[in-house]
View 1 (cartoon, helix red, strand yellow):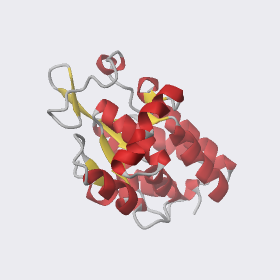
View 2 (cartoon, rainbow, N blue to C red; view 1 turned 180 degrees about the vertical axis):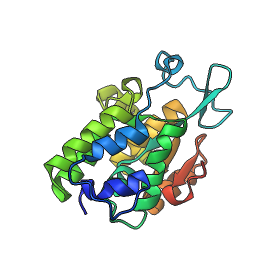
View 3 (cartoon, one colour; view 1 turned 90 degrees about the vertical axis):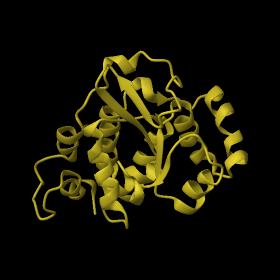
Length: 207
């Protein structure tokens, strides 16, 4: 199933809806078109208090939750033909309800590259525009040398793969809830170390 065919799932609409003349980007913008609160954009990375879990207070009554989703969540939601595609799409829809993404820049290569190979370049470019709109620049962590230097020791500490360590590094830096489709090799391994962040398989995401 292509990215355009996946749009009704993301929108909570019938899969029988014809969307041949509307791009998936229009659907995504309608449901995910938020802007990061000004109070958050200027805060120092890693300054969130760990005591309250993956929550950051903005003003007196606004609470947002920082999320780091690994690439498998985006791909499964957009392809819509995997076991947990519906749960992944539900998680993306919740971004408009007070959730904000914090991601490593490699998410572009993983998501768009996978879709380019499996679906096509048009789908990959639409996914790129979606990521542009969904991730605020202040919470997109460039995978440059210094960042990678801080990330690779996590491979040893947590027993995770090299790319997974990039997502874990971001989540640890900003106290985000980490959500993945990889239960055995990512979620379970991180949980065994009792990190000071919340870690979920997408099927058990509680928010």
